[in-house]
Image (tube, rainbow, N blue to C red):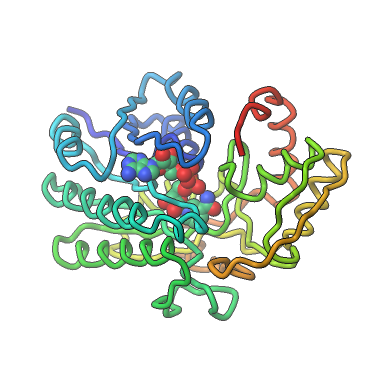
Length: 325
Ligand SMILES: NC(=O)c1ccc[n+]([C@@H]2O[C@H](COP(=O)([O-])OP(=O)(O)OC[C@H]3O[C@@H](n4cnc5c(N)ncnc54)[C@H](O)[C@@H]3O)[C@@H](O)[C@H]2O)c1
């Protein structure tokens, strides 16, 4: 059996790009996803169909919460590493249904760590989040105390990170936690601002904006995130937490709306609602550690990234119109 790389949540926005880059580099990738309907499954199928064009890719519809399915998968395949990107990822929805965040983000992650322990897999990467830095001084450094998560989503990621540390300490699994900062790009999630706003502006529909739009994000293009995640998976680091963020000054949501308006040639109709308590006002990464340990820094500016998103939207207009927001 040759060694393969396991990518979880592979039909998702970030994992699908990560898997594609691994395949482009000549690796054999096994991808799993439970294809849940938190957002329009057509997007997941679209991403998956692109991956299935590659003969070194195999997909299984498996839930990381289901240990029996994982046992079978790990018995039948020899993995060199596991990249756990599967998660319940929406911040606001985590207030409505915190239980599934615990079962996927904590128990699911633990199941995968147990598989690594049992099958002697020495490298594990966990996708984590800048949401953990809520209320801290910017730019956010990995050494900040993040023990006060302001959403169930962030709390479950903190729990998963802590379990990775335990498994590293007890069983010598090399765990790298990559904390992503607001990821955007082609085929992004429809519950996130960039895709929603782009479609709403183009369709001359009202934008629902929580807050006054002065909130800002350290947007990071999905290709930079995927590249950073792969670099993290290729190093023996012991246990490390590494920010992957744009590292530029954070971009205000109002500024993003303006950039989309210019490119779409239409004016946004904005309905400002109350700022959500589970949201952060600003995010901004210190990315010195990623640069030092991984030789990583982002290569795609926000202007270029937004150009790409709008171009992809226009090139795949009918598909995007069919995506439910
Ligand atoms: N997008 C961002 O800005 C961002 C920021 C910080 C961290 N992250 C993290 O990055 C990772 C990927 O996020 P994304 O934006 O691509 O989200 P996504 O929802 O597009 O991808 C997650 C995928 O995981 C799958 N999944 C969920 N529960 C599962 C389970 N129990 N078993 C198997 N598959 C399951 C989903 O079906 C989905 O395809 C997540 O861990 C997320 O928390 C994302």
